[in-house]
Amino acid sequence: MIGAETKELWEWIKSIIIAILLALIIRAFLVEVFLVQGQSMLPTLHDRERLIVSKVQFYYREPLNGEIVVFKATDDRDFIKRVIGVAGDEVRVDIDGVYVNGQRLKEPYILEKARETFGPVIVPEGTIFAMGDNRNNSMDSRHPSVGFVSLERLKGKAMLVFWPMDSIRLISHP
Image (cartoon, rainbow, N blue to C red; front, side, top):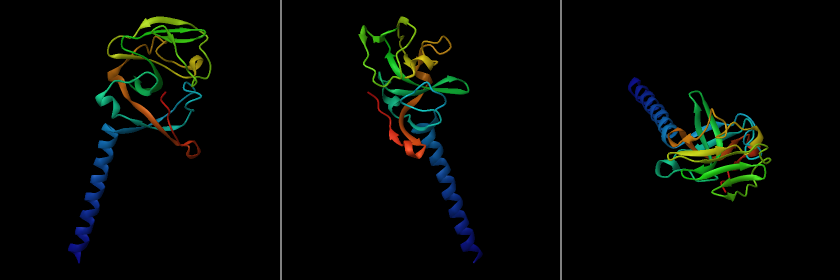
């Protein structure tokens, strides 16, 4: 009888260890949970929403303009912003809109147009230029402490809002 109980206990321990290892591998290489903090991505994302961020895409390609990405802003803080320019792009922010390579972006996702101008700047190789959708309340690539975002600092692409439950939705990337 003791042998059967010991065997069952060992099976439980093995199952728990495997579950923990799988969770660590999934979090390290595939997806991560992210908490939106602040108003910088309004109206697209709201303060305190929880997201699933996919790490897979950026293993085999660089981010694309319009994608919403999470990146390491400081050692203890992550930011979520929209990619506006990639390597080689010229980015300029005017009162009437954002221009990439001389073309004004169609941005139905922004809260309001920027009140201040910026640029033009050329996005260096190995970086992106990122901005919040709430242009007048976002610390983003226009701010000296953020600047161009190195591809090495990217954590992943925002895919799904899963909390609160009444806000579950896929995140649109025009």
